[in-house]
Amino acid sequence: MKEKLVVLGVGAHSDDLDFGAAGTFAKFAKEGADCYYLVCTDGSKGSRDPKMTPKRLAAIREKEQRTSAKLLGVKNVFFLKHKDGELVADMKLKKEIVRYIRKLKPDIVVAQDPTYIFSDRFVNHTDHRAAGMSTIDAVFPAARNPMTFPELSKEGLGVHRVKEIYLVNRTNPNYAVDISKFVDLKVEVLSQHQSQGIGKNPGFVKEMAKEMGKKWKYNYAETFFRINFAI
Ligand SMILES: [Zn+2]
Image 1 (tube, rainbow, N blue to C red):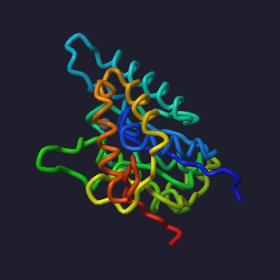
Image 2 (image 1 turned 90 degrees about the vertical axis):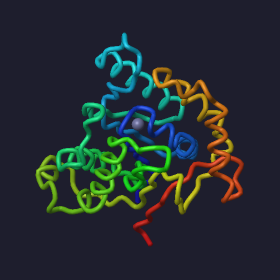
Image 3 (image 1 turned 45 degrees about the vertical axis):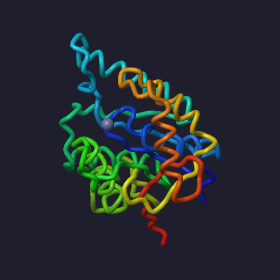
Image 4 (image 1 turned 135 degrees about the vertical axis):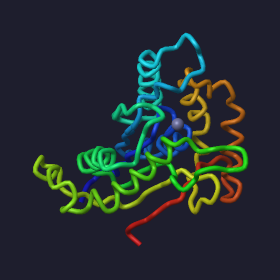
């Protein structure tokens, strides 16, 4: 039996995991879990500043993500550096995610919900959907199937069964994490992403967490669609 819980977050861009699950990661880390982030793109297109270059932006966003992760107690952040806006849920991306799943052996994987495509006032970014779908497929069946990516097994990266997936979900969640003790930290963490300007509106972050907590009678929450393979 492993002693420590291992939690891996997979997000499309720097800031996605913090936005959806910073409080949850802070809580896991505080409880002694080994937490990791895997960021699929370089975030090089997330700016409206005409003076910004993709290369400079990618470096800034990587730094912002490393700083925020440190604040949460996330042990390490890995970057796949796909081009921002061009992420595709193909076998290449799935294999890259499987590599990290087999290497880090997470009990829980946190990802974006690929079934959320649009609402009446919002389109979910194509990279978010690609990252979420690839992560689900990487967890099941790819990471646990010895016949999938046998070349990884030859590298010593044998199969691994993830126990749970938490998909960041605000529209039809089946699970909530009480982040009341961590909501101020979440605000601080999001303010690290200065290139994205999220931290400029801490009221919004808290309001959203409050809204998500209502159904579960938590002061502040983050909500998910949770898949538990153990059941
Ligand atoms: Zn994003």
